[in-house]
Image (cartoon, rainbow, N blue to C red; front, side, top):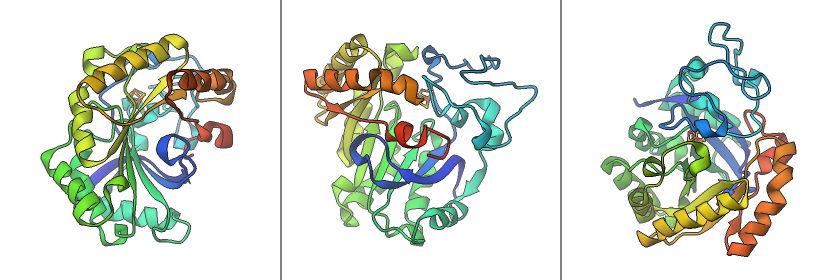
Length: 287
Ligand code: SF4
C-alpha cells in the first residue's frame, strides 16, 4: 500500500483562491524543491534564525508538535513542511491511515460538500505515485473536488495524469472538479526565474484540470513582475485566470497591504484572493 509523509492533515475553511470559504480537508505533504530564501527563510543547513521570525535550533529541537512551532510574518508559512529540521514531525502514513484520519475530521464522517486540498511544501514531487491509491480508496468515493496547491514546476507523471483525467472525466466528477492552484515564485522569493517559471508545466495541468495562477505580492513592482510572468505563460497557451494575493502570514503585515493589492488587482483587471486563514485564525498551524 502506498505511503505519504504527511506534515499536516486538518479540517478548515479554504482561505484562498477559487474555493475561498469552502469547508476543506488539507493534506500537507512533506518536502519542497525550493527554499525561497529571499523571503527570509533559512537555506538548508543554516538553522539559527531570529526568534521573531522562525526560531530553529537544530541542537535543542525544542518543538515537539506543529502546534508549538512559531508563525512567520512573511515568507514561507509552511516552512516546517520542507525544512529537514522538522522532518521528524511529519510521519510516514499509509493511505489507509490517512483516509481513516480524514473520516475522523470530516464533520459527518463522510464526504459531503467538503473539498480536498493537497498542498505542501510541493505536493507534486515523488508523492504523485501515491495519489491514485488515495483517491480510489472506497471511503474517498464521495469526494467531489480536489485542488493541488503547487509552485508549478513539477510535470505530472504519465500515471497520475491519466488517473486524474479519468477521475475528473470518465468517473463523472466533471472537469471542474480538479483544480491546480499554481503559485509561481517571483524574484523576491530568491529562486531563479528559469527554475521557477515553467509554462510547459502549467500547460500540462490545463489538459486535466481547471488551472489558475496566484501570485503573492507586496508591492507594485511585484504586481508588474506578475504581469510580465503571466505574459510568458499566456504566450505558451495558458488561458486561466490570474489572482493577486497579499503577502503576510500575520494580521499586522497582511492588513498593511491587502487593500493595496486589491486595488492593484482592479487596476490590472486581475482577481484578488484574500487569505481568510490570517484574519479568521491568525494563520495558526492546522488552519
Ligand atoms: S515553494 Fe512554497 S512551500 Fe516551497 S519554500 Fe517556497 S513558499 Fe515554501
